[in-house]
Image (cartoon, rainbow, N blue to C red; front, top):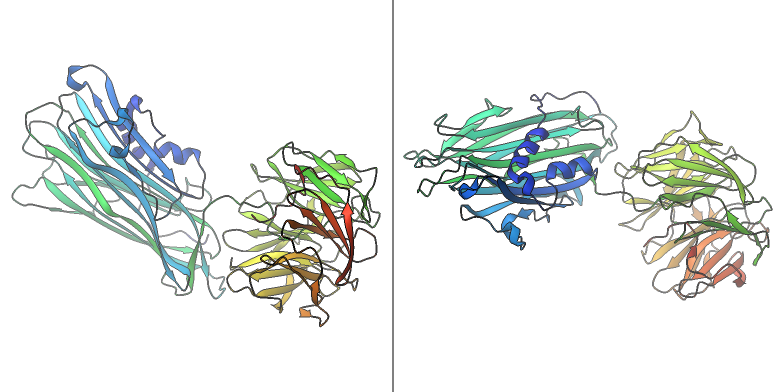
Length: 627
């Protein structure tokens, strides 16, 4: 984040929301938590909540408090329908005669798009409550709504300099405090918002304010907080002057670094308080904001666009390929399995298509919160190691393998779960594999150069495509320089791009693989033993297979189809050299029967047969394939 904005004073708005709605809901609330509690408990990057409630003290001369209320929560988008108190079928929600429709609250999200990208967006809230007199000591009613969205400004031209984003808040509400009654009461409309990066208690921008109408105190609305001095009110009927239109407009700017995630949280609610004495009149108090609380984020810079973060990552690794590794350094790759019910692990040591008798369980973490990221040789001992990540804490754990035995410990890769593993490969040619991450919101890339469990000081960002349309397919050494290279594909155009890596530096360009999106990545490995990795694709409709023999970014003329099973019940499990001939082989599994089939490759030709890995479907390779 760069600099601080010119901004109105920020007040702690949330306590005000909570206090009003606690009074409204009271102890009789039997439905979902109020939005204040929801936002306190959930850290979802995108969240919408609407609530409404009513409470009464001493109703009809009976001591004690009664009331009802509830809330609705969902993802922040234009389809969130919010909460209508009168839609509830629960008999406890039956409204008293003096609580009139409409009584609702909702939140919406509306992006403005250009060329398929978002150039501006707004959080929008609506709500209304109408309350009449009732024989009671005290009564109140309120609607409230909150929203949270995590957004990332970025530049289409890749300019890294700070950019200006413009913030516009608009509030139009209607307040009515009837004058023709003997019952005291008042109405109010409240709103607030803040933008922050890491600390919600130290916002980069924020405001809160209210407009309140109580004709026993003043003959027009009074503005408080940041609305004082900028809010205006207009009577709907000058001859009666008990109902006013409220207008507030507030503008500000922020100077921010592109690709840095920001969080926008907004609050609004309307409330009514009366002493509730029955007076025989038909007075009605009203606080209404029908579709007119708006907070808009945009930029005067025509190159600025916005991305949004909607939920937790669904994959522990972005790589679409799986390469088996040798855990015992015999030159033949082995098969690591995990039981999806128990979380236990098993290594099958391979010798061609045979499973060796020393195969068996290995003591890696069985807990379901520990997810498999990948394998690599992180200590240059010629044996594969295992990297796991805790999906709850974001922590990483590395197991250094020696057959089925291991020593292990934590590694200080970032725990921020916006950073997702993209690949494991040796990007600097030091014979120790490294861990590449990608930020799932900004699209930026980071390489952690590893030495055992230590992240080396020269680790850092690498300038690959930030555009999230470019997705990681996998890595391999395409130019035989001893360093892992990166293969990306554009999910919209089907185009492919290879980055030839040299540490954090790279040279990149397109490569002429099939752009037809029916052809999907199946593997990256050296199938012909020339020292350069190749690309295996499979047609998701026909089941056919095609090997592109690579020479840097060029595709060799001898590329072509390879005769593997086309039955789509046979699924790709990974590649590895199972017979120590320096050529990668292919492992398939039948998703219905659990059988395994191994193709020992020689270019596009293959010898094949079944292998005696367990057919129990609870045992599976831990690599998470696409759904």
